Length: 197
Image (cartoon, rainbow, N blue to C red):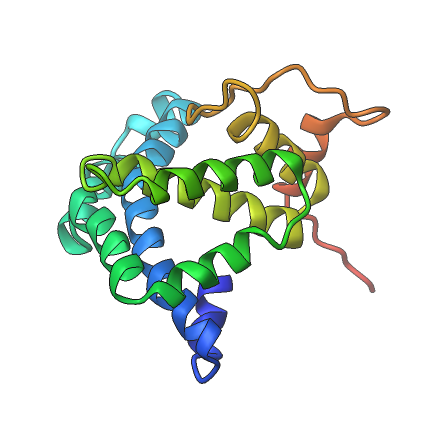
């Protein structure tokens, strides 16, 4: 939604710059994560997700096509580098986005990204890793600023904390006092319909 908003507000130079780099990061991230997300959904549904009557087998077959339509991971990652080199203001607008959420884990991740960008030697070789880290930092920043507090905390703990990784369902030991964090996240994804007669 932040990226869609940047399109709507493209007359603003900062928004236009963010749009340039944000699209390239989003294309890379979406193409890579769609496959894993659909595989997890299939696993969650078990046998019901495997049968053709469900939409999941089709989604599983089609998820890899994103990188054919939108460009391979390498092409999208190199497009992020191209944006940084040809339009340095796009990188400044990216950092404006990710640095606007006060979280020590995010701050540390952003500093590591800056160091990685500053070392331009063999940056093309490291492009996929760099863009992956940029996508996670942007996601964390958006969740911290606009998302559910508990979900944002869980995301940052899992993705930006010690030993943060990309595998779904791997959470560190959490110290959220008086909260049932997983119950809260699960409830968020259960639509409730209120009927007022």
